[in-house]
Length: 359
Image 1 (cartoon, rainbow, N blue to C red):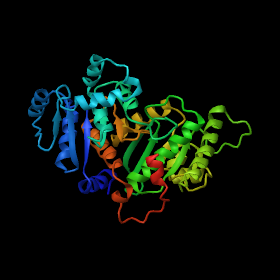
Image 2: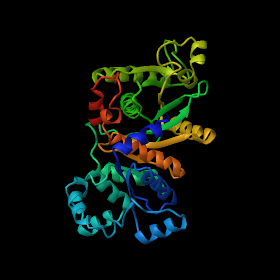
Image 3: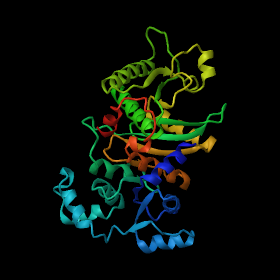
Image 4: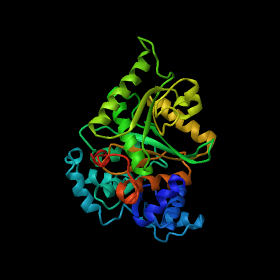
């Protein structure tokens, strides 16, 4: 069973509320309708009620079990204003400035998430990445003292040789342009933790480069960076008591194809079997994610943000309705405890995974 179908089954048992700040976008309406129709929870659309209803009528979309909130008139504005005043960034804002902040649907949606009026958020359908990301960064607390936010994209695929379902987690595709060695290690462990939570499969993390296991005494600085990041991720995973497989540096084909890994004499449990791919920088990750999506038209979800204390996604403006739906399923599923997602599974990873997901 594909990852999306697997998680949908579980969301029926543990439904969640997902807020969409861009409620008047046709793709958002279509994704929300599918989310509600499958009994996965309650989609919350922000925007002008009349406008949303008009668009829904034109698209022949019923708004049953979909909550529509006009954030400009919401009775929660007074409460949210108090929350803003408790945040240092906003404490010196005037009443007029606070009202202006609340008039922005992305800020209002982030406040719904922060106050547990929603379990997850999906934004960015018709705004620049920084416009969707800024409210989350300013309102939602970080998971830990690193204050590091990154992102991952999920591809729900089929194994070419066997036809079996296969998931790939790619990071960081949207946030940090040139991550440091420490950033790469942290991104790898956080991405692996989410991959395990959503799939219940042991993460096999590949740090990617243009070469595999270089034996040069003085490797190129870009290769040395990946080698050091691999070592740091292995140390970090050990500190977390997180039993995962990590290897690098590996070429993309050697990380994914067992035959190629064997032909290149690259051994290990990750080579040819990686399900988490960590890229050297944002440029390579973003280009790869969009290339895979364009040429394969595979099911692709995200970017999903990591490092925040609440599940959220900052999607691309070019995203299709089906991918928005899938992204909503992913972030909603993040709000479910792993043991509830897989109550009867024989978990092979240490229970400390919960600490990684919560800290």
